[in-house]
Image 1 (cartoon, helix red, strand yellow):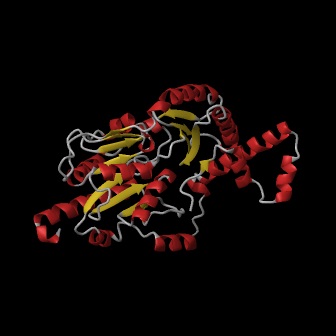
Image 2: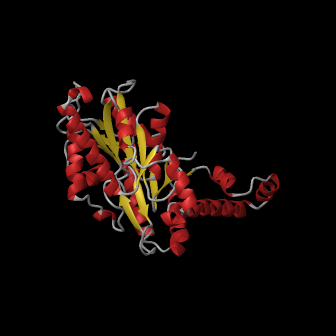
Image 3: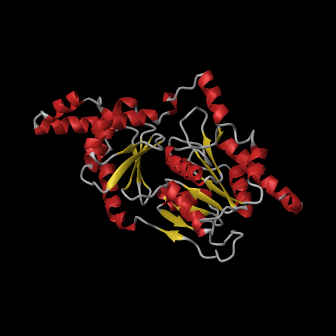
Length: 354
């Protein structure tokens, strides 16, 4: 399955994905004058982006009762099967990975106001006390840290391209007292800053559009943009990215993500953190990854391929996913994490049961 809608840098590949698979049709395209051909190709690219933008809207996902019942059957609530999850983790070290927006905090119109509740912060602090815990987000690392304000966590910002460890190690493993620092896309920083300034100017004319600089990637938010203006916004972004082939476009929830064309994502970040914790080839680890975004699918896929731990998708509606279980919203995420803390506390009292 496709983890996320990636807009390929190769316009030929984009054409192949957006026009009928017919030699006759392709032949018609190739016979067009060069300018006409390029215009059609670029139009096909924008059409693909618009389809992707529509698909990212929860209102576009079918949620008929029958479909939802079938989906829940294959992706049951993590709260309902909590005891089973604990049973599967027996004898292994649980490591917790969490997305931020839509997982620890509700999705809001203004990205600058995506605050966690006090209850969530308290629960998260309890989780970090008992388990190695990481926030893996598309957000700038410094920004998400300003929201969470817990020094004992690992933070993987910019889709894992900016990773630091806790200032005070909470890991049960020895030799992990040094904070992790990993930035595989540092050489792209000047380019990303340049594109950020250009996009700020180019998107001014689209009401509701905002551009967020997440240091190693950029987010063009269209949550507050009228759907009639999506094509205009996509066209503006396309024209800018045409000049920067080293950057690629991916799709999130009501956001266009612009990232360096390096092979790095949340799944790679998860593997890097497990390796840093000493669990690279270990069978004694049970990773739990909770996220709501398409970009989290890379992490879910890694867990499936490793055959370790579980992925939990946060969603009220059926979606194609590699996650094993679901939770409906951040309030259910908090409940799940709190139960995890309570289980760990009770099992610590009785070592035999742990």
